[in-house]
View 1 (cartoon, rainbow, N blue to C red):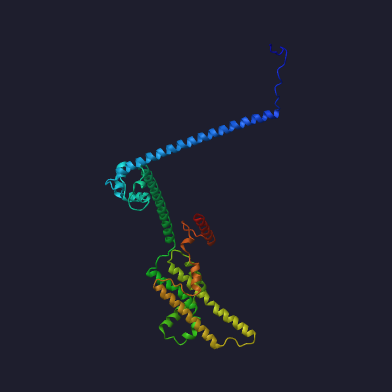
View 2: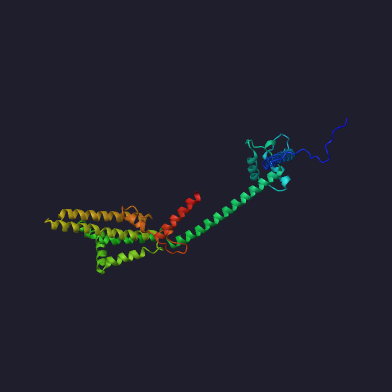
Length: 365
């Protein structure tokens, strides 16, 4: 019954041979499985960490809630379930061992009192540390505002000193009685030069004391060679003196402009006469000449009379059409001088004004 045995020298059955491509696929599959497992493990760890963090956060909130409730019960002296401003002040002073002003406690109450009932409920109450932190923040804010106020006050004081220095340099103060009297004298200049326009109205008025006094002054005025030029340059020079009162300087300039204005009617009449004569006409009719000179003289007297009354009242006579505005444009102002009293040219003033305007716009933006 013998079982046949393989001979000793027989070879085992052939083992299947794997190609390189099959080996690579098998290796990649195993690597992917390991990577997936690692990702799942990391996700599980992250979920565990989140759960632990949430648990710690919940424990922290619970501890804070318990601490807040404990502090709330200490602050709620009458046990009515609410903390009034007085109770909050008393509790914080005991806990922080410091005195607090009623205004500061009221400010603190208004920040945490969400429903504006004037008291704090348990859900509005926070820990003492949070109150302390907010009080410190309020103190820092108050200190910052105080420093800003001090800085602003210092700047205002410096500006006031600079302005006062400019005012001392430029006499724009209310005129004294002496200033008012002196400010009337410049108007003699256009009045004397304008008497030529009043020859028809003043003719036959020699017995009038005012006309007689005016005739004497006019004679003395004309007795000085180049008196008109001398007075013109003298008034122009004195009006540039900033130490003289503004009313005096204004009237000096206005008297000069009124005197200059007297030149134009004569110029127009001369040109008209030349044109008419060239065309074979007979010149300006005498009636028109008399009317024109009378109107000029009355207008001059009205301007001088208005300026005189205003100056006596201490009011700047700046309502004469065209003339007064020209004078105002020439009058120096405080912004025309720097802190040392030096005059700043108009171009530099305008450049500085534009620069300040741009800086302000950038700051507002």
